[in-house]
Image (tube, rainbow, N blue to C red; front, top):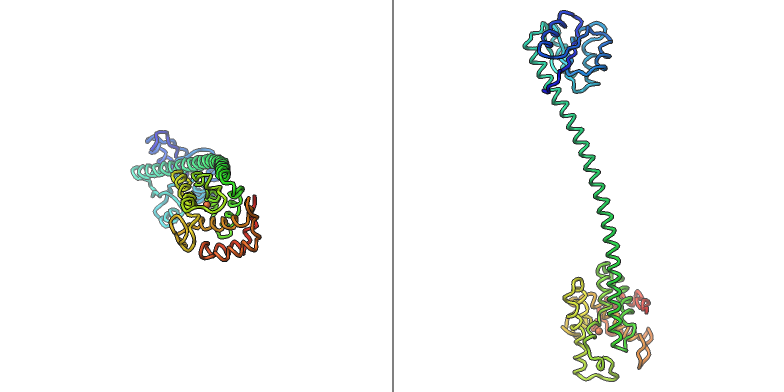
Length: 359
Ligand SMILES: [Fe+2]
């Protein structure tokens, strides 16, 4: 119980009762305001702050039930103790049901009075403290919600920043890869523009075959870099007119594994390395360097093989014109299932992927 002086309101039409109560309570250090009842009760209750109301039940004009209801409706933490005569016991039970804290029998004994008063005030304190905690809890809740909102806003803006930075990095990355691809082409005079055409053909074939955006991105890099290993091939062999010797053939074939070696240690390029090493594998297992077969060949490598054969046959070379579309398609159908994945050849022709043959 806190230390301030407590205000107790006594409502009873019988003056001797009020007097007894007043004497006991004042002696115990309480502040007592008393009234005989009537409509002034409500005004007094509104204009003062009470810690406890002790009210008679049977009174002319305004009875105790109305006092009780008024207090419960307007000051929900203030306990109300009802006073009752012996004959009113059923009424006393009724008022308890209506929210009275307790009741005292007249004539009121001091011990009983003090026990009920202390118990009522303790309850009042607990209810008040509970109310304060509810307010504090609500404020803390609002504070937390505000913090979460601020933090979310901060994180969103950071995420957008990262997204922008990632966009810049990605575009720089693809530009570097492009430069690298052009460097490879510069070594091999037969294949000008080949890498860029491969990029468009492969990405479109990959899209038609249902690849995810992430796989399409990997495929885009792999298509540009599939002949990266030609960096390690002798230019004289690469640009030789006429048939190659067995050794020269073996030397050129090494470009698949050289490309893999260059990329294998670079983070984010592991997948690309696995794809480019297998771009000369044949569907029937007769390709190189590892004689992989069917589904053992990475899907993107099979895509590159389809686009590669299309581009090799359809583009002009210094020593010959490119073949007409019908002839290229006929040849692709012929090697479908042996050199190339038949399903991908089907998609390439049916979806007219060759229209994406851009320079
Ligand atoms: Fe190649």
